[in-house]
Length: 274
Ligand code: DGL
Image (cartoon, rainbow, N blue to C red; front, side, top):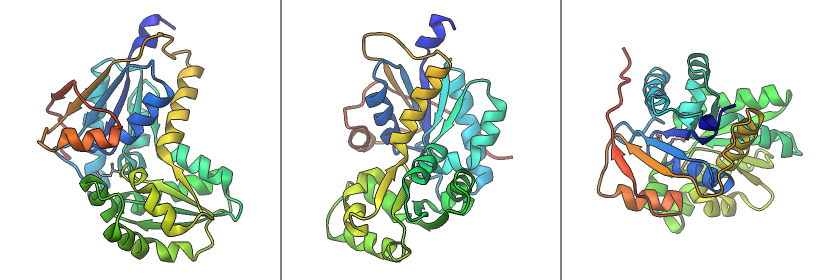
């Protein structure tokens, strides 16, 4: 494999800022990799849209990143991963990694009761992507899914703790807690920000699985198999493309990524469903 391919960037896209939780884990795990992030902030949210629309948007996002010469594509958005992974993998000749499979594999591997909970957006839960992946990995496993759409707004607003967030978490999660699950998959880019409240609500007996962390491990393993890990000794470059830049973006994004964001550029992406 040529050096050029090793130095090519990892491309990551999400519907907006949420995928920065995945970017953060990639940077932590693979600091020497160059990273190009595309946030489709003009068309967010994906979580309430139809599969047809999300697939069309995802294809547009993917071809933009491919045009930047990336060596691997990460679909950081759970909603996009749940419906667009097969079409993207078919069309592209670079590895395509989503967040569903790594999260499901981890959850299936650690459950002792054989009962796993999954929370995500309406579209992710409706797609049954996590349920199907879990049942394929571990036949006989029982999956209890629940959409928790308000968690997205709470994380965007920075309401990651406090009475209102606890109340909403209780409303969403108390039924799930009674099912006997011992693992709960955080199946949305925003939910890791609410980890503390979610963990307190479901109790210590339920282990939370953060798909972002598992995805970073998967990326490392795929790049290593392809002999494409960047062996540079300096930290990689970061570039952020957005389809809309709002005043609040930089502060929200900093919270999701855990570091200040610069090097932002606005782009137009095609991909409206026909
Ligand atoms: N990034 C989305 C996800 O992980 C959440 C935000 C949205 O609905 O677009 O499902």
